[in-house]
Length: 301
Image 1: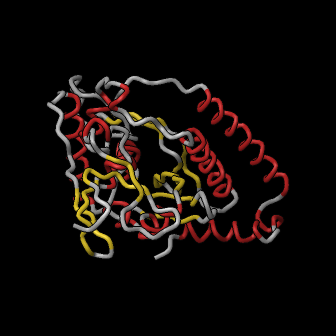
Image 2: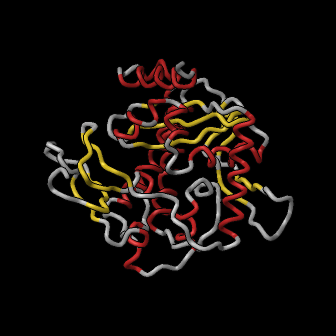
Image 3: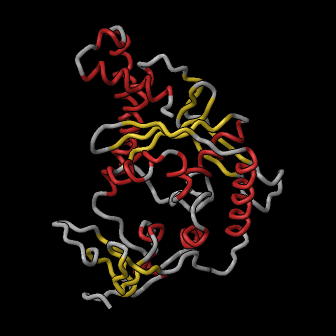
């Protein structure tokens, strides 16, 4: 079922797209919001241009990641073991921040009640036990007393993940978005609302409502505590994932590839030193997608 928040956002956007600005808000209010957005964008540029490498710590934005990735983020690796970030990483980060500013701007033009934003979070999961860190973070926005996270998305992820609703997010949660949202909401004794997602290519927006039972939330919290313990106690490194057989039109190609989670990780070279980043085998597309292969052959075996 479509979210009421999504309906209200799209209603405003439809009016703006059809040059009905006066039906959305008085000119004075729009001018004020433009000034606020300009200040926010200046802060974004300052943050991105002056960003410095930070010492590893567990925080809201990473506590849901696989433990193998967190272990390697914590460890000082050799340069050749880390995949260099692509040239467009900087612009992706800026566009992500800009997406949040745009979505916030639009929400302020609706009658959705904004009950909070940019709250600093401290989550003590171990009752003051100094052996384990307090998880810190900053939430994006609270609407109607529920905590929402604003995300920007590629067209592929928008269609194949976010448009499938909560099951699409939780089913393949490569970036720990569920645990991140819980770490924003539970310490404040507020309900997790979900995600407001902007398709960076098309400008489409969808709202994915959080739908996890309380018992399931408790299980997630237990998992988060186990992750914190595991990383803090410096256990021996162990890969969380195995290579997979590749199929093309349900037929095995004979190749082996890395799972999607590994393909987004910066430490592929550490875990899979012989892996090759190649165009998808058997693909007839003009620009086939790139895949990390651990075994690759030109022909079916």
